[in-house]
Length: 173
Image 1 (cartoon, rainbow, N blue to C red):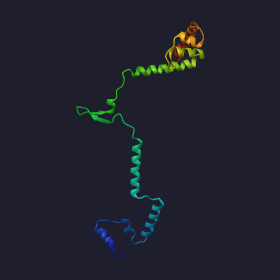
Image 2: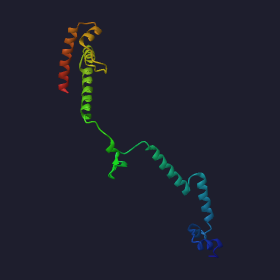
Image 3: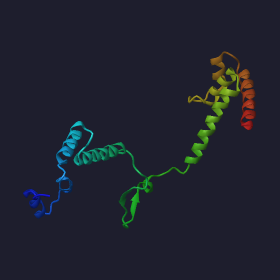
Image 4: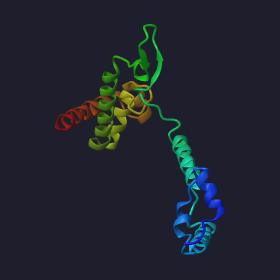
């Protein structure tokens, strides 16, 4: 080979290396390879390391923004007076009768479904009005009789018959 260029000597003295350049120095293909690399970079096919790092940072911020409103119940929020850490789970209170309320709500849903599916339309209307299944206040037999234009005793018979049907249907489910 020939003489080493001056800038290579300077690079060596500064502990800087140019392995790709030094490797291809003798073949003369360095400029061709550099042109191809620069052309790819201009076309967007090859991204610089700086662009790759910037893209990674942006992806991290997007992921953080996506999970911004989420909290873990085991996250430590503060310490108590004794130096123990408190988690979010420790500070959330639960009603003691929550299970009973859930059971009652589930039973109401089942009853409403059974009233809708198992009874005749008139029976269903009377039971719904009588026991307030539609979210309104329960009505008396007299109020239902006035609304329907029939006697209170007839409302009583329809209610009794409908309740027997409901009982049989609920036992079967």
